[in-house]
Image 1: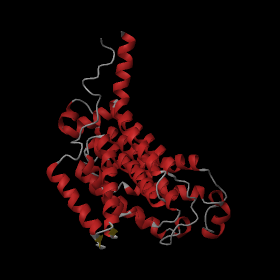
Image 2: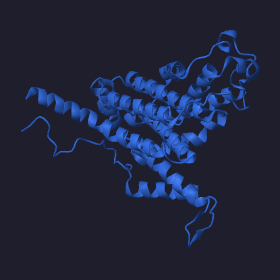
Image 3: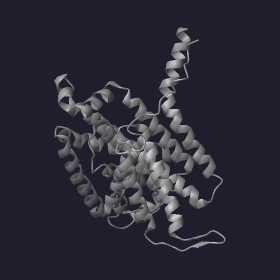
Image 4: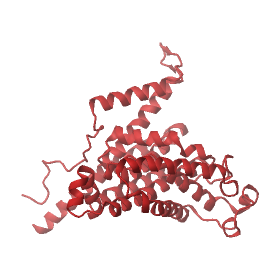
Length: 346
């Protein structure tokens, strides 16, 4: 009986992850036999899942909507590019690189870990002063960080090619690679929620004063969530860069910042499930609207092109979701083990 109870407890613990992992895997399986356009859209969707779940580590658990987290995406993307661009190409693309970096070339996996770690290290450095600020001040300060990082990347010609596009980046992010990144990020998010630090930051999200009164060190615990968030957003930036192959600083600025925030809000800011369902729902809706925007031939009926329909339709859909579901599609709740299924009991 004890063994059955342990199995039942384990099943309940991993069920929320499986409930998200299986549909994502099925989407990839279905898209693998589709058109190249559908495969690219699916890969982009999975990268968005990595970014939004990575954002959830901090924003979802602490309740603080940071407007500068995409600076970590930029760091992950550029660090990954510098580590993976072939040495022979670095010689003429970035001739002023330090010799140790100009002669270094990594494969994808170690480069992804190093690039994500660099983003996390930068987060650890700025977390020291930022995490001592109140929530709203953190949001505004992070927007300043985003502007600073964007300007530095845009003007550091010797390291990033400045406003010129970074080219020659290996395109190693396939649907399978993006799926693996998404699953690792989702699993880590669920694991962090169950740690003592995760429980403490969520307690501070619900009532900061009460959390302080029972001895929660907000600066330390928020800092840990902040660093983990930076690591996985850096991973998302690496995957995105290795997907595009060519990019510039504007790819990691205001547009992606607001899209990621919108995806989390639409899905539900207080749950990992919301952080996954949000980007999936927005990506599917965006893809459908884009097809209609280009015009469609339905045989008897010809639907003319409607330029701008994607932006308008997406905005209206988000407004409707937030009107009828203010807490997002999931209502801020996780997917749980069905109550009628009772493992370990007769």
